[in-house]
Amino acid sequence: MRYPDSHKAQTRRRIVAMAALRFRAEGLAGVGIANLMADLGLTHGGFYAHFAGKDELVAAACGEALRQMAQQWRQRLESAADGTRLAALAEDYLSPTHRDFPDSGCAAAALAGEIARQNPAVRRDFASGLEPLMAILDDARRLDGGGMAPEASLALMVGALLLARAVPDAELSRRFLDQARAALAAQRG
Image 1 (cartoon, rainbow, N blue to C red):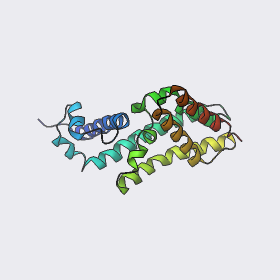
Image 2 (image 1 turned 180 degrees about the vertical axis):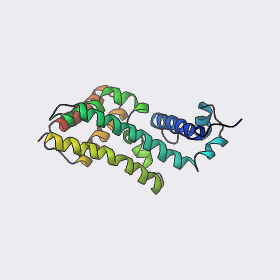
Image 3 (image 1 turned 90 degrees about the vertical axis):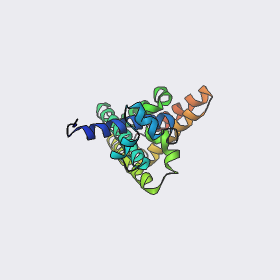
Image 4 (image 1 turned 120 degrees about the horizontal axis):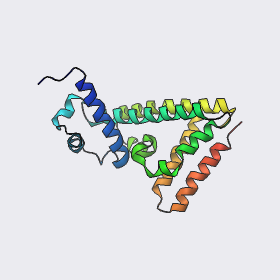
């Protein structure tokens, strides 16, 4: 049976979307290609019709997850009131819901530690995925009339979320989120 021309592209998108969720939830090492493909009802061998190897999938999945995050941030930026854009982004990002559901959250907070140990090409692709997030943070700073550099804002947000997820003490976790939100909200010009 011959598949429509669009079938291969649709299948690749399904693999990337599932990998983006699973990598964020289970980590890069926690996701095997055979299990990922089986969960999609596909064969392990079929993976290689779409990707040269796991590194290519990691880059595509991280890119997709970061693209989705940038799209959400752009929408939030556009809906926020004047002078509150960075605070609005921080409110959403540094929330208990985002902390508690890494599979649908930010790939930077979920995977940066593992990405740091990947090959240079994967690390470059990951860094490229961060650029739109920093551009949005820079837009928020400009529209709000001041604030810290976008790299500093992103580092504060990702670091606070990462630490809030890592500690077993619920009160300390909450304080990481609250204090980072307060620091970002105080950055208005």
